[in-house]
Image (cartoon, rainbow, N blue to C red; front, side):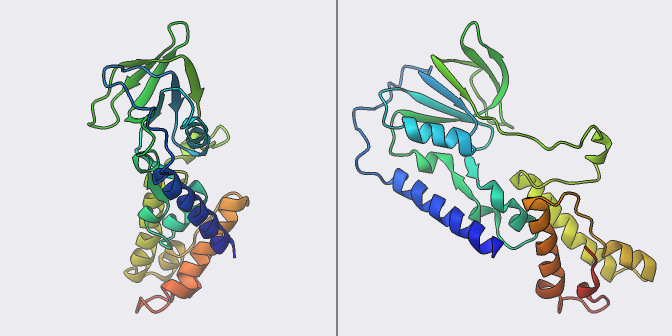
Amino acid sequence: RLRAEGLGQYRELKGQFARFAQDPNADPALTRDPVRRDADVLVVGGGFGGLQAVLKLRRAPVEVTLVDRRNFHLFQPLTYQVATGALSPGEIAYPLRAIFKRNRNVRVLLAEVADFDLDARELHLRPAGAVPAPERLGYDTLIVAGGSHYSYFGHEEWRMHAAEVKSLESALAVRSRLLAAFEAAEGEPNAEARDAWLTFVVVGAGPTGVEMAGQIAELARDTLRRDFRTIDPRRARI
């Protein structure tokens, strides 16, 4: 039921993105001056907050630049589905440029924020990976929606052992670790070590933790139950 509700929400949101991208009523007067580099409104982050801000401003008489270190919007409520192999990455990610391709006053810039100079009204940038980016951007109005990060409650040493599922990359890493655990158990001759490989611990009983535990159980007891010869995946403990 939770998966169906999440998929329904995402499909509705994806449909809205498609309508925005194909909107025939986009104001043709809002064309970008190719000489001008700075924006009236600078939005940091292409998540839910930043995306909604740009959508509200797409028909306003302003130039908008959306800066993100990734060129897609990620539907984070379903990252756990990617982490357990139920969905592919492309099913929960939508290109930011495709959303705003008909809004000529909106520019999407692939870059990472390095610093803020509030007195000078400038944003300092650094390249995202190997993609070059301008060193700085000026603005009249700044909207910061950079999102959040996991808290390990003062125990940063947990980070190397306990993976999170907040980004697409981390969800894929968790999926690889989950599937590798079943593969390791299949080739492990020692019963005690085999049981250890088939033991999964989820810390946190919020929406993500509950959904993650349920998806691991579904993976073990349904998806993979006939795929192995030495082990019975249904014996996995969560």
